[in-house]
Length: 349
DNA sequence: AACACAGGCAACCGCAATTTC
DNA sequence: AGAAATTGCGGTTGCCTGTGT
Picture 1 (cartoon, rainbow, N blue to C red):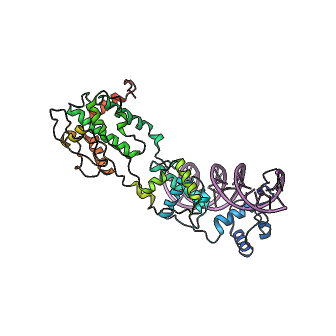
Picture 2: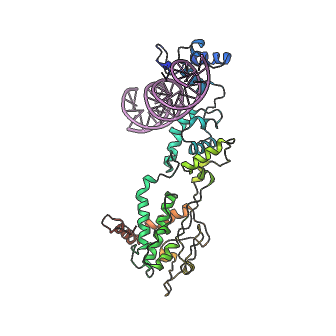
Picture 3: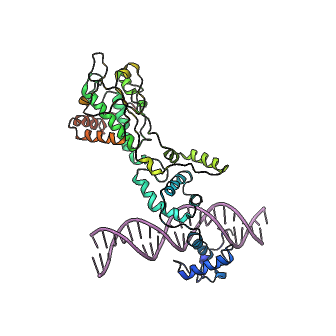
């Protein structure tokens, strides 16, 4: 019962690539008679093929409205968006791409787009950043944050020591780099400030105002979680499914606007509030006797932009390069490596 | 020139869903 | 109502072609 015997099991039925003569026969028959009963069609058309094979050949290759050739950028972005929403529902995806077949889209996804997304560090299944691969980095991020809270990073007295401030700025840079790599995965560093024993330090760490990189609409679309996708699909089921007029999806990954991670300023220390995300704040030039923190590009070795300039990924990369070249980084890295080595005492988290 | 390897793609296979009787 | 037949879908296979050695 149940499953019918597959016509492929019929003896003597040809398999494999179609030859032009077979295509001609199939096309001629369907153009004259249309198609309806695929099982009986091969015999009527004079083909030694099973119905399934005929249907596949017609649907994926011979029917006149098939569109062949390179996928356009627009088609690519549509596929990405729909795949994020629908998963491997190739036929549904194909229904939004006139002239394209589910088989063609599936092949294109598996051979081109999947690879492309992997190269961009995006999981082609979940459309999320591949955070599993970055778990060691995430661990590092948490260790760094907790270390700051406990004054373990660099020299222990963060408030009164310029070297520690340099370390702090370098930590900003590390954190920012991690945000570039995986903006969604790096947590807001202020979440690590609880249980701190140093109120003054709290004010510094609390001024770390991290924001997720604001996604462009198309990025937001592919970042829907499973429940959101479910809601979206349910919603779409009740209305005509209209694709939003997003731009080319790949464009969104080229110019991440980075949020400001930290502002070390007199103002912040006094008020305990952070600066507006996305901007660097005041730059002071000395450490006043009242314990407020001062930072200058000269002492930090890092050339931070002006007070209202929005930082871009390339800015940070430049800073990163300087950081790596900076011989004074050695002590910073030593502190960091000491801290993160297996023999280190565990933190409070 | 010959061989190995990898990538792309058409086609196949098996199952689920739907339709027919 | 339920069995059988048919259609549709998605994963997988295997052939063809291009490229590197």
